[in-house]
Length: 267
Image 1 (cartoon, rainbow, N blue to C red):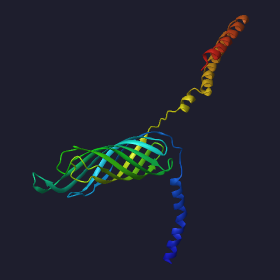
Image 2 (image 1 turned 60 degrees about the vertical axis):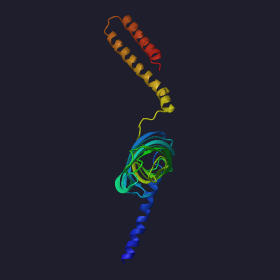
Image 3 (image 1 turned 180 degrees about the vertical axis):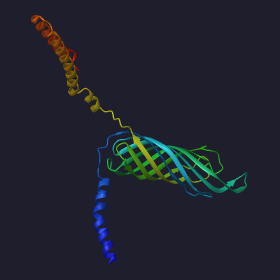
Image 4 (image 1 turned 90 degrees about the vertical axis):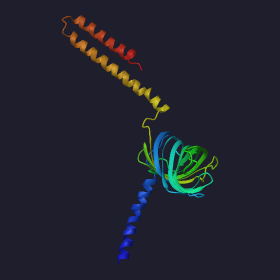
């Protein structure tokens, strides 16, 4: 009996789950190109190599990029730090020691969003750049310059058109010359948030500023103002005892209104 009830609950929940999945991956808005900035941080595993045993570390950094709607290009700065233990050479004498390895990198990443405009957007990417790394656990600080590269796979949550949360996994590595005492291979789990400007300048927006409708609105304003002035002058002229003066003032008022509408009311 319990199995029948469980099966009934599962079958009744399947349409709800399917509908939720379809709404998450459906296009909810029309994406537009634009600049974005963001901050990110996460956990970094510097893989053990040679005689180094590294602990779980952290990474933190920021990005600025441009979204082409699908393809994205970004400039990324990242700092990584890991504590560890190993054997160090002190004047031909090897001894166990502990310390920290830090790295600072500047990368250019190229990424691709598979479902731009959907609530959930999977993406992949790759990057290359330059890294400054410690030579070893007790080596000089950020003194070794290396070529850096990485591969990225992740998923983004578009909160709205301006804010996005990214969760991705990365393999990050560098060349091993320049006195490095370890193989620099890293696995990073990264959580980040990006935001983009609400203002989007385009040729269409500029044309709208000079559209005929706005010109007509300005002309209508001046016409209403001139008509009001003419009506006020006409009302004042009615108090005059001379009928001729009234007609002359009325004609002059409407001539002034026509002049303002045709000349001053132009866009």
